[in-house]
Image 1: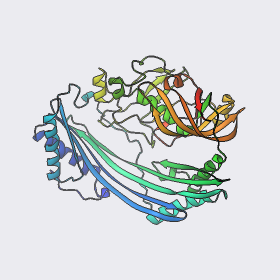
Image 2: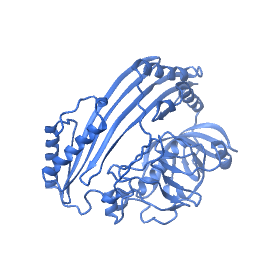
Image 3: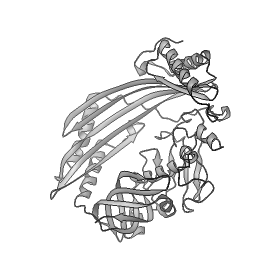
Image 4: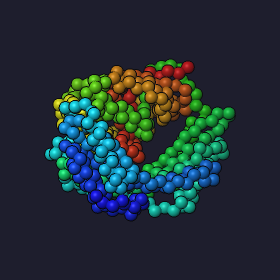
Length: 450
């Protein structure tokens, strides 16, 4: 087996990591595994936080880890280690096989179908290391917070600003011959401030994130946006209980799509714990709704050449003309359902809902009178029944114009009705995550307030 690698990620090449994964797979074969898969990652980063103009924390992060799953027929065992020496990897293989020997037979367990594994993996432009010095990172975080605090005298306090960098290499391999790895990066800058007026305090935040630091918003722009959002909330009051149209602002609308993905995820389907059970080929949304997965977008935060099992990812429609066309399946969940993996072990990759022609202002004009939601609280979502109930904050809108901020309310409905009652999708698409959506206008929800 290979000698112990150095502890610094930058000293390890992709070939070094591939050799280590190959060594571990060979050790598993020698110890009697009928199949095995290995994932190895090396990561590093810098985190800096500042509050009220003073640096609070400066942290350098470095980690490495190897995870192994070994099979004895259709019995499975897993183990992991952060020690990459030959002795430690041998012991990790022994531990995984010891677990497998006592595991129950599972007819759906095993490696992916060989023909589904990724072969030629294109370069998705995911790696942009940011060699920022700690002093520079501190200055950037302080500039961001200073910009927020300087917007208005009513910004009285701050929860601080934070800058984070990340870079890493991950290699995957299995006993079917798959062996591949790639580097990626992710950098972010955020700030949260508190506004105060007439004995009322409101907080809000803003952030920017990108693979390439050059694509981040300017520190001053992030700070000013956070401050403006906090100021807009001052004077908030509750509403009386009612039913009305609702807009989910773009930066929280992704949560609705997250519930949809949860309902079509293989694990929930084979356990029969989804309100969309047996909905494949049936309408779930209005016919203007199209939802697709685009895992190969260059530099995108959700892009991957293959899923967590090495199965190739492919662009495909989940919903077309409102009709559910695909579930979200790993190898195991696909076998439980008598289907094939969709390349979604580990989740979806760049989920995109097709936007409509209107921006947020246009959606508010279409809504007329109703509620614009900008923040959600709590986890009151039941994927078995679709029942939905969460705390919310936002703005009351009349004749398409914001009237006043709103707080201390609960919104409630059923996700199946909410999806069918989707009226429009804005073109104000939020690109800061794995889900790309504009603001979403729903026909009606119940608002519980005073």
